[in-house]
Image (cartoon, rainbow over all chains, first blue to last red; front, side, top):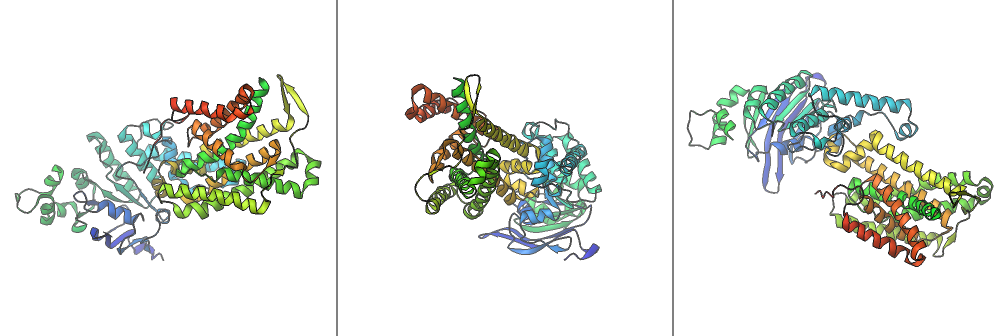
Length: 272
Length: 297
């Protein structure tokens, strides 16, 4: 079903998700191409994470379509969507805490492992090679995200900021074409945020498209190529950081109608 | 005394093999598979069936025959474990735990009374007994077959330990036991890995079944019930969900029973062993190696 190079990498069209009467996502549309960085912003409960869950197949959308590399992936199972090149991190870290740091990232290479039960049982050269490749690749991604902690130790013993890095490394180890990051800056200190900014640029440089959910507006304004603003599941703005910054609907969503006109939305959002 | 320890270790290695399946399945999907002991019984009967059909060969080839029978029984019980998971447990994935637990009890009855229909209610006598010549080791009489069976049990456990800690499949198992949803997003085929876990756990139980058949000499369709309880206990003593814990727990239970038998008599064996365990668990509720019992939704 692939339609060649002209189709966007990921296209979300008129996405709807209802829970009973609640419209969690109400007509979201956007698209990203290779190396793009698009941010989804909006107040808590605006439907950002719900949109992620639809894209990754955890929820079945009640309307609209999602295409990846031009192929319709709407409503496919999470494993099938993951196999087609998406990868994600979670708002609340979901590392495998009782596995070592290295094993967490090696688990990300699982789909590419070339070993079957017999290889493992007989310890064939193919098995050893595949394990070595997984280890090398995991180490490369941990270098890439700049992990400082002990790689042989349990993931849960790392400091919070380092765990965030491991989660990104684990997602990258899947070699995604589209990477969905759910609030990667949450809980990070100033220095760590600066490093995250750099990391996001380097991931884009690999040609990976990033869709970012983030509350830290400084970060969003600096790193995004496009920003989509959601409120109560509805898309209220879509544009470059400069356009969104001046959009009156955005200011209203964050502030309510009657507040000071001269305040820019960026300041308001940062205050959140 | 040495003889007591030896007997304890021998029986304990059966318990450990069965406890491993319990603990693996619990570790990966938090299910107490009460039908697990019945797979042990199934293994014993498969071994019995094969030995009866090829009885002449068995006595001729002796130990090698038993090895072949062991492998056949492992493959059959492993497959039975796969079917059990596919038919009884997978449709209930995500259902309340109590429903799955009751399904497990139902599956246990189904296997027990299914076997009663096939093999009849009377105990069968195993065609191969592990009597043989014995050698004297530090005052204990040990037959070659016993020693070999322990060796097999140890090899199986070592193999399992390596599989879980050193291979991609093992990594996937550990990842799923931590967070099935995140594992799914990592592209891990959760269903396939869970199925594999059932296969391995059931095959180990089947191996223990054949070994027990050869050792005790008598099998019946309810033999899995008691060992199921004991293996479950062993898994809990070791710290449920912990593979090394299951091995230690099984050996500990075997030793306790052996010492209890010698000390206060065979009819008090279980009373002694279980009293000890109750006291132990009161002092250390998480078992030997269990760090903490994490309850996840």
